[in-house]
Image (cartoon, rainbow over all chains, first blue to last red; front, side, top):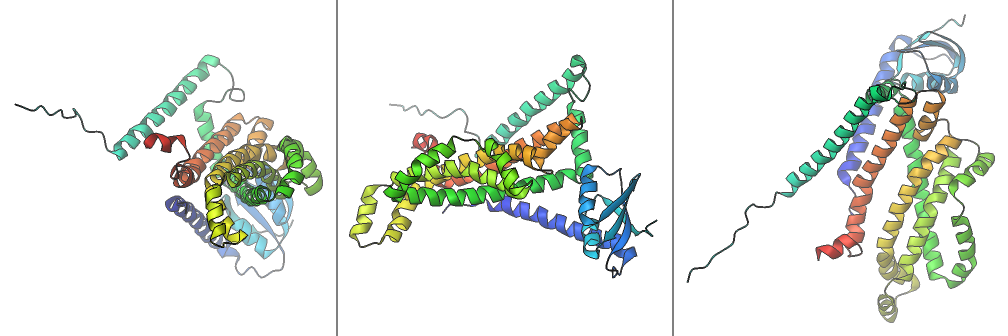
Length: 102
Length: 276
């Protein structure tokens, strides 16, 4: 039988696992001020460390309704808790706060 | 009478140090190229849009990583690549075995396959976009199309050149068709199948860039295209370098070991012939 390069596969799996754990930890840290996320859908302001590019805006549009971009902050409406958790897992998201929608 | 014994002047270097020396030479080549590129930028006198320096490219790489764009694009590309390669390989092997063992299927399908083989995947992508829209389905289908033919033809070659003496021996021992396939034909065809896989994997990697340029909004191919569209040529070059390095990694870490453990081991390559 062909020998599978185990160490390369193991290294790739380890990197994927580490990034998943890092995303999970980052998500918990960013969502700590918001917990519990029990509202069915809410409005949030999502701040990045840099002005969002088209890539980030498209990702955020998948999670809710993008209303406005001001500096490094994106204002979103109608975000489900699962979508907020998913967005918080991205390391390029610096912080998430509730937004009164105005 | 005295005897003269000739001793070698120096012992050959161990394999690990030879590998290290080869690696260092490779790095030296890359370093010289980068230095020449960096030094040529002020001489050429063009802006970063036309001719970015290696430092611009490195900055673009860091920026793409910091903003989370490159990891997502890379993951999307790899998902499409692995899916397309896996499905194409399975279909190619199955088709090759079917056609190789069945004369009727060979006569019916051969003209059609030759016709389809002549049409490059880039010609199909616009039609796939009409049928399946932009994204994963279209790209995976294009890659399946690219991988299918080399795997199929190599499998066919392997099946048809399986030693008849083994097939006859198994039949005389009372083996059924499935047992003949499992114990004689497939092992004999395996080196050809692996060669087909390696060729298909290379074709699929090139096809991935084409497909993502036309039919995706993410991926390394899209990054290459988007970089020039947004006048960020350094990002295009980052995409090209990532593609090249990824292919090197796939080839060195997976395809070559796989080939070594099958094709070369069983004496079907030039290297193996020379070693004897």
